[in-house]
Image (cartoon, rainbow, N blue to C red; front, top):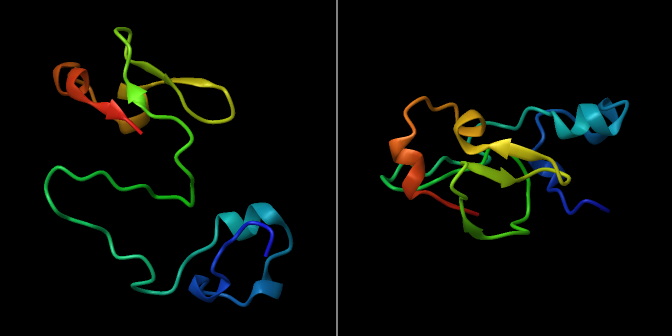
Length: 90
């Protein structure tokens, strides 16, 4: 279990995946990961670790995946800049 994934959450048996891409894009069994619907919460649709914490810069960009820089607005799918000015990136 190199990647520390709970294979019991997968909707298919482990040997059904022919490569890592298929495994990491797998469907999960129903209710494997309930979504927190409380206000003022942020959820992540992926298995991940927090490796950086800080405020979003004046240009609205953050270093996110494998050293690549993304616009917070594009990453979260927003249009109006105002709500993004108050976000703290995790």
